Length: 170
Image (cartoon, helix red, strand yellow):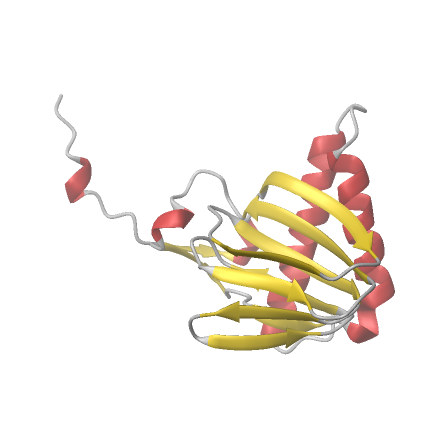
C-alpha cells in the first residue's frame, strides 16, 4: 500500500483539556549575573516562569517585558532572544510539547484556547512557583512514576495558562 504524506491534512485543533505534555527539559535556575539566550529557535514550546528580575523577550515582531510573577510562552520555531538586562535573576523553564504525537514544529497544530505571550500570575505566584519547582524536582528524579507526576504538573500549568487566557481567575 502506497501512502502519500503530501496529501495528508495535518491541520489540527486540540482542545486544551486533552493535552498530555511531553517534557524535554525542566529546570529551576538563578544567577547574580545578567544573561542572554539567543537568538535561537527551538523545536518545542517553552513555558518560563519569571521568578525574580526583569526579562526582555525579543522577536521580529518586537519586544515584550516579562516581570516577576509572569509566565512567558514561547512557541516552537520562533526566532527569539530572551535576556535579563539587570543583575540577579531567577526563572523556571519547561521545554515541552503539549501532545507529543502532533507536528507542532510545522505550525499546523494548535490548542484551543492557545495560551501565548506573557501571562500575569502575580496573585498566584507562590502556587505557580511551587508547581514549577515540583515539576523540576520530579523531572530530575528516578523515583517510580516521577516522570508521570512531572507531566501532571506541566499539564496543570498549561491548563492554568489557558484559563487565564479565557479570563478566569484560577
